Amino acid sequence: MSDKAKSIASKKATGQDERLKEVSRLRLLLNRPELGAVGGAILVFIFFGIVAGDTGMFSAYGTLNFLDVSANLGIIAIAAAMLMIGGEFDLSIGSMIGFAGICIAIPAIYWGWPLWVSIIFAFAMAVLVGYFNGILVVRTGLPSFIVTLAMLFILRGATLAITRLITGRTQVPGLRVLIENDPIAWMFATDTFKWLFTWLGSMNLIALRTDGTPLATGIPPSVIWFIAVTLFATWILMKTRYGNWIFASGGDKNGATNVGVPVGRVKISLFIGTAVAATIFATIQVLDAGSADTMRGNLKELEAIAAAVVGGCLLTGGYGSAIGAAFGALIFGTVSMGIFYTDVDTDWFKVFLGAMMLIAVVFNNFIRKRVTESK
Amino acid sequence: MSENLIEFNNISKFFGKVIALKDVTMKLKKGEIMCLLGDNGAGKSTLIKTLAGVHKPDEGEIVIEGKKTVFDSPKDALDMGIGTVYQDLALVPLMSVTRNFFMGREPLKGPPFLKTFDIEKANKIAAERMGQIGIDVRDPSQAVGTMSGGERQCLAISRAIYFGAKVLVLDEPTSALGVHQASMVLKYVVKAASQGLAVILITHNVHHAYPVGNSFTVLNRGKSLGTYNKKDISREELLGMMAGGEELDKLEVELEEMNRINN
Image (cartoon, rainbow over all chains, first blue to last red; front, side):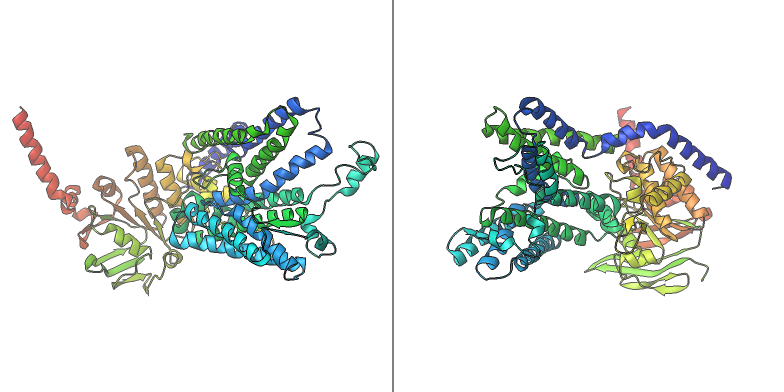
């Protein structure tokens, strides 16, 4: 190409660029995967603002309540979303939560390990389970749906059998006393910004107990973890080379392999990610409740996938966002708590959940068509 | 013979008892476009995969710039400057032009261990490269799915060139395209060759191959029927040499027969 032609071409390109900027902003927004979930969350807040605005749902205490529920779900939903973008499923998240719980409780209570060692042990087991899931899927080429469904049963069964074998029960209580002075446990068990709430209480801006301390004592650890995980996952997906590999692996496995993306390694790491997220969830819950239970996390994998789908992840992979999954989790948490503040029978919660998911999937499908066929 | 950029001397490949390729020889100079013609099952795919380092030849040698070379993996072939654009193009429709362009070879910036994907730089290069082909990417963050088939093909070729291809291997680049789109791709291929690349164009469409090719190698049932310069062979002769030639003649005769009966 001659220099003159080059300059004309580039001029043309830049000229068109400027002309299209405003249109493409709107299109860019419309094409973002999290659009549906953000819109949905706004609708949910408007709905509860009208129906339950004066019931205390949006008081400091009520807000922290539904944020806590959303945050717990969000931690696993984001990991599930990243795995879905990478083109795979993990149905063993819920069982991993139960398994991680007893991995912390049994060594700490029955074997006399320090709590922090037990927590590290649980995370090590999570890495192992995730690696095993991943290597099985990558090596055999079997659908991850089947492989992790098997793992769902194996982990839940092992959790129950081991716990009963060692303790004779299905619950392991007595963890709360171990939290104090532990070098790690505080990361999963401390309310933060207490001073803020004390101050708000002293100014009579938030509800107080009869003894004068505020009802809401601080931001629960789940919320801090949730925000950190969301930011970290978004950074990875949008800003790093590894993030590009995740999209590529889920979008077209063969194509990605042909241009040198280590698809197997990417997928294995994402499976480790979901298992580790399940363990963060489990650690927070076990330390909060002071006990581990073999049934913890039951069906959580489906809620996590649902939140990821509401957040804009395609079931076929290659598309989605962590922020979307975070908003998906926020919708679920808000509705599951908010429904108590309305006159609606809480039995209807699951109906809402299902309907929400259906709408999200139809909407996502429409968005995908827009993105890929807009010419 | 060191003026040849790349030589394939007596390449053979066997799969068990099946002889997929037998004594195939090809030589290419810089700026040359060689069309590799053959009907389905002629061994085109096996030959491409051998060029791309997926298969190792059982006999024969590959010589690049005068040096004998063995490819142990597709990455070896890539590093030696053989850029293969497969039929499926290795593009992800849901990902943006930029993310596709740099898929697997993302430019990085920032301190060690915290290196991030340099999107701005990538966007700039992608838009620039696409502009050079005459494809106006209004927004390099638009999904590849929004592009036409010809544009996607050009994107894949442009990517191969950007990442250092000296020999471009194109697998049926026009088979899925309409006339207009196909001519756009072929024009780009000619331009690439004029900048000093050697191009191996694999196709079963003589009408697409003939106008752009400098030389033609015809494969039939795993064997080369020879390499011909353009001045030595006509379009019809080429067509005749491909397995389809005789059959097309027969078809013509049959159609005439049918016409006579109908009239």
